[in-house]
Length: 92
Image (cartoon, rainbow, N blue to C red; front, side):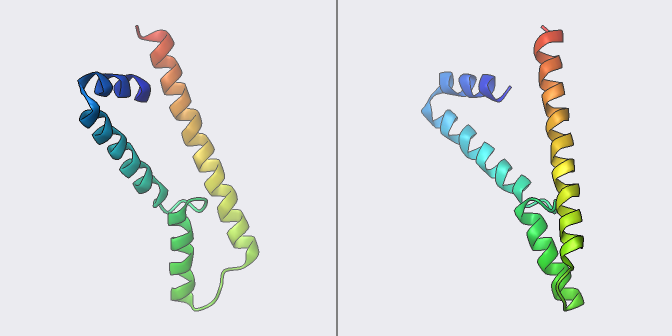
């Protein structure tokens, strides 16, 4: 879908394509700041927790949170792939 939209924007002109690419970059930056442990927002969230409790979290807690974050991202990617594949093959 992104490739299709990029193609449409490219047909409209370079300015439209650059705006579309900038919009994608901003969306990716916002997604990166979500408080999911694997992402940068998750690291900032851990720093906030450590500042509030005034001690570092244990290695085991951080490892567990990272594993949960990776699982959440994997599930999100599976959902996105499923939606894209069903859209491509089952809706003309």
